[in-house]
Length: 457
Image 1 (tube, rainbow, N blue to C red):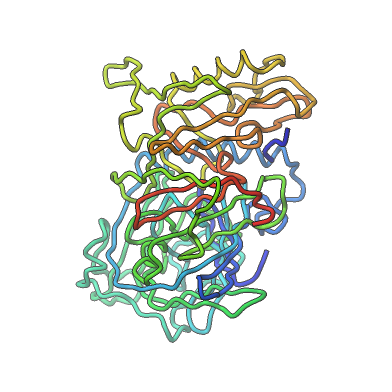
Image 2 (tube, rainbow, N blue to C red):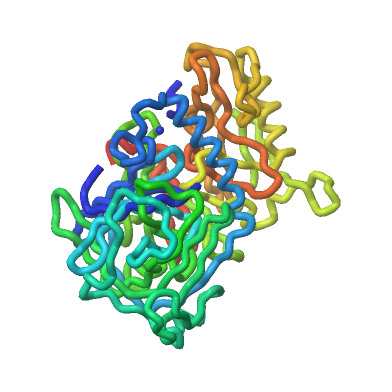
């Protein structure tokens, strides 16, 4: 049984607290570009800590999953309409204990920056000079005055008026005609600065760079929270109009992207593809509808049931009167998120899964000493008879999860189930998505899954 465990060139370093971090190395082609998504705990990542063990990294990733729940509960979301048009793109993703980093260059001449690639937020931003309040970062600060393609957005423009928190301000240069934004995350991290247009360049070690002109982004002059020094901002890959995906959609790529996440024990980079290169089809591919809900940042799916072996368990959650009720008919009952490591499920439904697994797995049950995971077994062997667990999404999309998607070794003699209960929000996390080609089609409003050996993708 293979269990879960978790660079590159042109760089945009964005430490997105509790978000998927991607290091982006892009390969231009007629079908888009390719870049590396680098897991923050990979040796390819600047966040890599060689003094930590693999188990330590997993524990930290799981803690971040629990904290990240707040990101989905009370984030201050903003929206922005854009008339940008973008080419198709493919990129490489590197996992970082539940967070993926993405490399990109910004401005003209291009300045390398590293950002967190996050399917749970929209705004693209990086720390900028002059910095009134910034977290420490290793990469140099971006200086908009040295870029010939930087243009601030006027506060009377539609781009500014669509923001929930924006104003004509004097934060930096006293210009009352400049749009100033404020963007907050559920974990109380924040960025404030100037909304602007700039050129983003996705580079490659084996191909010519791909440049995207006039991308709307935030030039952050006041930033703080749970960011760390290895990055400098964030790349929003959510469904809202501010995100890189939505802006690329305007650039004729049809709103398609896909990624193939490597198992966490693998030290290579995963890949993310945009445009026609992001289409997921062929033998084994299944698709489920994307559900439109507020906020439009998140990608909502409908989970109807989960099977443990041949035993099918209907999805259920608590109704307002606190009674357990089957809610498979309720659309959009779970968020798919690449930035959350664990899968989070309603407590009653999770209890049903635990009971079914207990009767199936022939091993001694033990408690997680860290109190994060609710179902653990004592075993020094990886083979404890973990059954195939199938997630039944609407539209007949049955996603068969292998042991590496559902269990992880947490100690030399302990293996634990990587789905946990949550009363606040249900999330289909990135461990469950590993070794699947996962494709998003914002035009057709669907998400597709295709079992794939991501080491060969």
